[in-house]
Image (tube, rainbow, N blue to C red; front, side, top):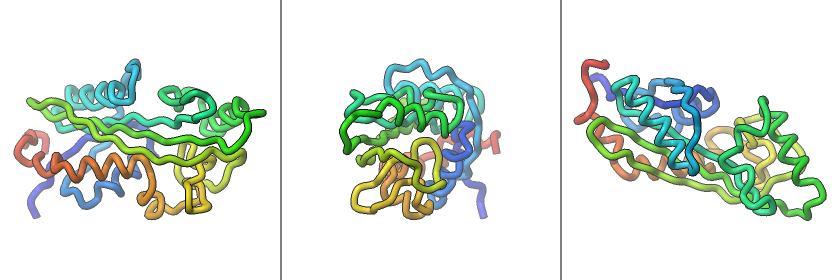
Length: 201
């Protein structure tokens, strides 16, 4: 079997890495995790995704995928959005802080998850792929699956939070899965064999 093109996933988040291994399992690429530790100083998801992808490309010489995602709560004007990972040092503390800010706000707490994927390939313009999932925040943890705000995000029509879904069910609804589908449908990954640095194999 010939070597597959290697694709760097620019994250140190074990949950994201696991999801991408599942989402891109049939994409014909070998995924390599690489934490760029980039300062997410961008003002949009796309800018942060680009920073990660292009930093990984620069350091590895391999095609690189970076993403940025966030939870936007309508009643809080889209907060936490870009700051979703910064509300506290742990998942429990972040979700608790978000729920604290929602105390006294009438429900339902409508929200959406957003994900933007950036694909950086040497000699080409960085490309972007976006996905979203609309739902609502619930006031208590439900389930232990997933990561981030998954246990308090209720998916319409399912009666479940992402935290209550097995991976194969979450892939049908999630913002990251939607962005990954857009990436796959673009044909961008099928083009990597022509641009891969074979010395990196």
